Length: 223
Image (cartoon, rainbow, N blue to C red):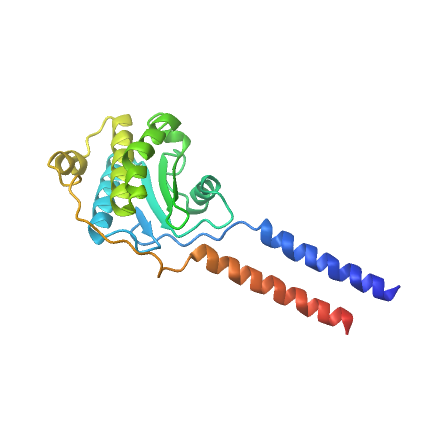
């Protein structure tokens, strides 16, 4: 009888370990000091980062709307829609009380991306418009492996549509884009195989902790 009780507890510990792993929410990385661009994969060039920061800051200064870029290797077991939405809440992007926020989230190894917007920007960026930005300005470059160009063009269009909603002009966009600065990109060779996945590392740590706890308890109950 005592043996059956021990076996029951062991099975419970196994079940608990698996459920805690499967249903645990992902741990998100800390925002970078750059605020508007958070590249954890080394995908973006310094020039592209600087353009995004400049455009994002001007948009925020003129509208209080905040649009951020987050690039990771993979979202793990979570789909990118849920990941982007959860990241919104975790980071608190945008001006408090206005929900005027936008997020361009890309998973490089997953080969997917998501444009997420708060309620305050749904008028400027409804699903149809974000879909068009994705299809026309981002996906064609992603298919070529040119994530740098796809991210910059997509981000620029998001900021452009947001500025229209607030009836403001973005000097950084209007001047540089019309002059062709955002349309000319040098060829780049992208190789992300050397970048480790933050989501994968976190999952490994959770797995290790759960199974260490599990095997310790099995040992104690058996012996």
